[in-house]
Image 1: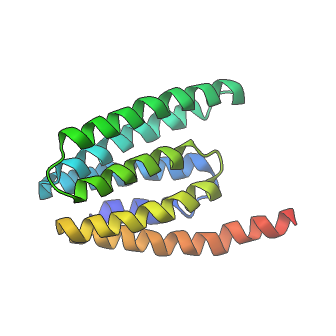
Image 2: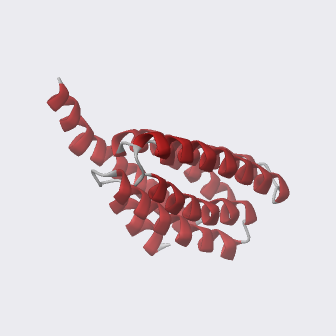
Image 3: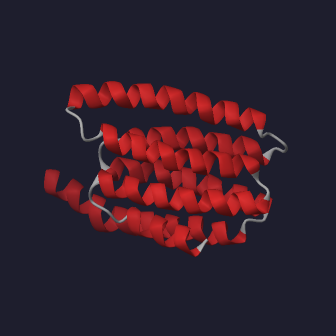
Length: 168
């Protein structure tokens, strides 16, 4: 839980999408392990798949724009299907619906080219993960996701507000 929190808090402070994706890889890998230990198969499935998803999007981002966009669309469709199928297969209680929604928000998050846009979607997703964590008793993950929300808000003030001011 601590490793996940540190990765999540640090990644949302990044100016570049590549560093946000690296942090997402680490945070999701550790969160997936944590959910697995709690017996929440849907949370574990989604987080571990999200770690792989982060790596693939990061590789796609290194391509020229037209090729990147095509790769991101293909990866997004594949992972959306994988998240939904996994959510259905691992479904045991109402909270699994929340993790499925978070997974689809993750698809939107990592599809963004700009770190600021990623933070906007992550804010909604992290709020839903807090609700999920409370319901499944994932107390270390509550701390991770709540502190990530604080970090996102800080980054929005520190980084995103400056960018908006520079463009005006």
